[in-house]
Length: 473
Ligand code: HAM
Image 1 (cartoon, rainbow, N blue to C red):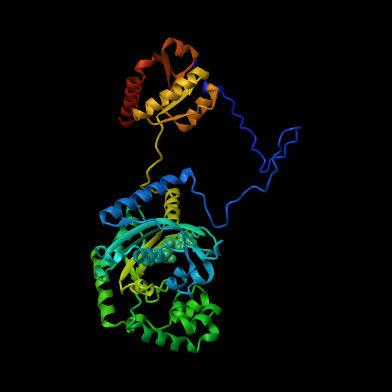
Image 2 (image 1 turned 90 degrees about the vertical axis):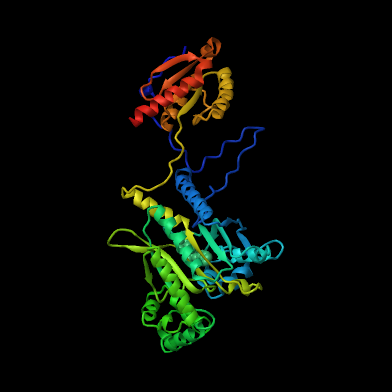
C-alpha cells in the first residue's frame, strides 16, 4: 500500500533558471540540429493578459454582459481591420489619432487598411452595410474588443487596448445621452470606482460656425505662441486647438471664448435636458467649457470620465471612458441623416485602478478564480489509465479538480496539489487497483484513508461538505 508522504522532506531546491537563449546542441551524426533565432519579444505597447489577470477581465466582461441585457443592447463583433478611409473621413484627418497614431498598411491586394483605433466608425459602417435603418429604431449595440493606437506607451496607455463601446443609433433625444451616461457611471460604481464626469455641449451645424469664427478670431494674433500642430489646425479645424495637450497651448486656451455664448436654442435645450437627467441620477459632474474630445465626429453632448490616481503629491487624472453624440456620422458615410450617441470605456485603465485600490487594501468586487477541491494522483501506468477515466467521471459529477497525468512521481504530484491549495487528493497505485480500493488524502493534515473505490463519489461529497461546514462555522 502507498505510504503517507511527509511533505516536509521534499527537496526545496529549485531548479536553476534556464538561460534566455539555450546553447546550440552539438550535432550528432544523422540528427537534425535546431538553428536558434533571437528570442521572440512582445511588441512594444502590447500586453499579454496572463491567467492571474483573467479574474478581472472575466468579472468585467460578465458585468458588461449583464448591464447590456438590462438595457436591451445587442452585442456585435466587428473586424479589427477596416478600410483606412473609414477612419480618415469618420474621425477627421486632423485628429491626433488619424495624423499620428494609426497602424496603416497596404495588403497584398493593394488595399489601404488600418487596425481600428476605435470602434464607433465601424459601428456606423456596420449599421449602413446591414441596412439597420430598417430595424426598429434606435438600434442599441455594444462591442468589447481591442483597438490600436501608435501612441507613446506608458502605464495606462497601450498600443493595443480593449474598449467596451456602447452605441445608440437613430435617437436624438437627450434621454438617450443621459441613459448612456448612467450606464457608464453604474458600471464604474458597481466596481467600486468613484469617477468624476466632465461634460460639455459643442453645438451643432447651426451654431458651431459662429463659435469657430470666434475661436479663429481669438487665436489669430496668438499664432506665434501656439505649437506647430495647432498652427496647422488653426485654418482647417480650429476646434482641435481646444484638445491640444501642449502646456503653452493649454494656457492660451484658458482664455478662449466659451461655446455657451454661441449655442443655438435647440442645443441649449438639449444640453439642459441632459444635465437635468444627470442631476436626477445623482451623477457627479463638472461642466468643462473646453471639452471637445479628440475625434471630429462629435456634435452636441460630449463627456469624459476621470479617476484620480497616484499618491497625493503626484495625483493625475486618468480618463477611463468617454463619449458623446455623433449626429452627422451616418450621413457623412452616405446614409440618411441619423442622430447617434455612444461611449467607450478603456478596460485596461479600469483594471489598473482596481489593482491600485486592491494594493491599498480596499476590497474590490472581483470574482476569484475557481477554487480546486480535489487533485487526482496516480502511481504506475495502469493506475494512470484508470485515473484518466475516473477524472472524466468525477468532472461529470461536478467536482472542481486538477491532475498531473504526465508526472510519474507521487511526490511531484502532491507538491502540485499543495501549490494549488486543494483540499483532498485521491491516489491510486498498483496495489489499490488490485484490491479495488482508493486512497483519499486530506491535504491539510496529511492523513490518508483507504476506502472501497465504489464509494469514492459519496465519500468525497461527505468530506467536502464537512470541510465547508468547518470553514463556515
Ligand atoms: P476615446 O476617448 O478615444 O473615445 O477612448 C475611450 C477610452 O479608451 C478612453 O477614455 C480610455 O479609457 C481608453 N483609451 C484610449 N486610448 C487608450 C490607450 N492608448 N491605452 C489604453 N486605453 C486607452 C473613443 O474611442 C470613442 N470611440 C468613444 C465613443 C463611442 N464615442 C461615441 N461612441
